[in-house]
Image (cartoon, rainbow, N blue to C red; front, side, top):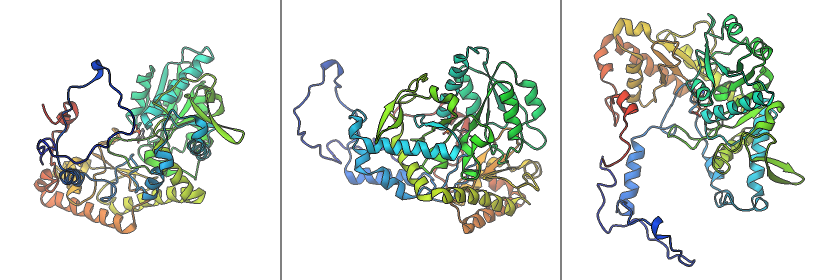
Length: 475
Ligand SMILES: *Cc1c(COP(=O)(O)O)cnc(C)c1O
């Protein structure tokens, strides 16, 4: 495919620039550019270029996207419509709050709904992603311990099944990471936890259900152990889609949570944003929340600064359009709908699991939550076909691959999360495709090493693509 720069012909234009209605303002000489190197193309070429590019990508609107841990559910278009209301899009972040009351009301309402869903007392919308929410909450946890003159709490405990962002955020926030292993049931090993908690424990970071798609049944006991040692219990809310409306992190004993609005609350994601990772907390941590926070005052809404705030963690007020989509999603579903979305997500995962588990072994005899992890160790030993080969073969069938080689404690792992928005017909088809690939692994393994045959990009060198990406059109 030709780059847009390669299609450039001097003098071609896709748009006419409007004569400004205001007086010209001269940029100071030292700030002015000599010129701007933009491709010169006609509107039709521009439209075709981006349309062609869009066809080389795969999104939820193209087909089933069972990427475990990412909750790639279908996002109703109604939310986009609401986020595009001119009353919202034409706001300026610097305009007086009296003239932006609707926007503040939307934010305050969303905070209230998220607090209710999670069982927390206060919520900030500022963080721009889940990992950013983790970092924000960890800063709050540090400020809380320091505020009690308890400076020795410098360790964050993380289970071995944790998402990579947990230890990364803890390290970035200046803590030391302590790993705790899983037990035979694949939950946190309680004896190992008891052995590592102590006077230096700042917090335990946990997701429930875990990244294996299993509910951590010992959560109440885990909460007691962590709280007994003076630590804070942190909820990685990336898996909330399995339990929202059914059980609340606050009631499980968690003190602080992050949510991924772009996962659970239906905002298109996968291309790198914009996302939103609100943080909710119990009252004892609320004074440390980022500033500004939105509050209701009389009949109106104002921005306030929490007493011992950790400060601002994002530009302006965060990714506002994502708040609107999440708000629209929660309001249109309502209390019953939220619960039913979670229940259907769990049902769909168990349905798909039951269809394929003869060929794709997983935790047998156990129900999963919203996702499940299979291990292809046996397939690899018998045929040489790897989890990577199976994932690549799925691309040829118009299905996005599941998450691969994660969590790290399962070998040759594939992690499926179909979400509640896939129909029974779609799940039947996904299972049929997987069974066909399994048979091919035994009859013609070489074919699977070649897959995908029909994708724009076939087998990139994944290490080089990640370590030394070429991010510019011209070198
Ligand atoms: C996605 C995810 C995160 C990180 O969230 P981002 O929004 O991608 O930064 C953290 N934990 C778990 C379990 C996740 O699945």
